[in-house]
Length: 280
Image 1 (cartoon, rainbow, N blue to C red):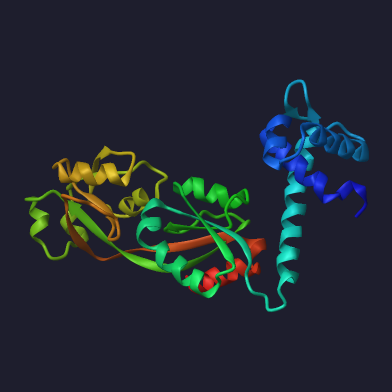
Image 2: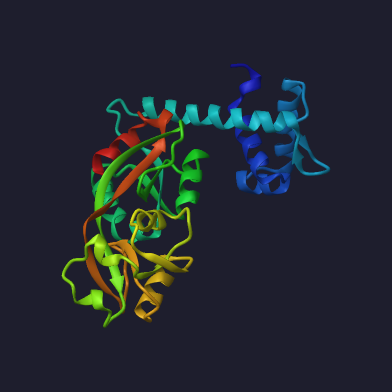
């Protein structure tokens, strides 16, 4: 590959590109700052272009272009190492998994327990996040996979698979007329006041599919929604696995939401992801 693609220089450059600070990059890499500077200078000399503006602590246009390629090259190197490291193809290394808070608490642990039993050499890293944050994490290679409710956005970089299904329930205040029902039908919700999470949230999309409810209050989280329902402010629509202390949960007839696993399409055959699909 030549000096241009010396992996040590690329790894150092990637950290500098992220931190935009030679001192911070040196601390993260456990190098002397002079070593970081020398590696960046060597890369600049090989490319014949300035990559990092030390005065303004910014990447140059050439540096920004190289940053994307550096990520791709180093990811491919890691994939190649994983592919040849074990002749049996047994997964190894780190696997970063993102999930909604609700799924982290009630759904993902069972999958990860099974995965850990079958593939003990993999270090699992679990991160919580909002729906948009999780998809962005996968898109930018900060996460290998993520688990969300509902369908993933249309994106050519994504591959997705439905890995589960969760019933939907209507949570209502104690004493509400709907609390006496064993099951709620869609027509029972005509004109009923509901609380909802903001637009763009997967839970809001579930509610928007129903025509009858009247959304009169918007709250920022499911935890807040559950507390407001328990306090008598209205009803809410949530997956059955969501905690809702103080509120009454009644099944919504025939309504479920999918649990979806999303990963980068080009990572389809990475051993760790293939094994996670099997567990999920």
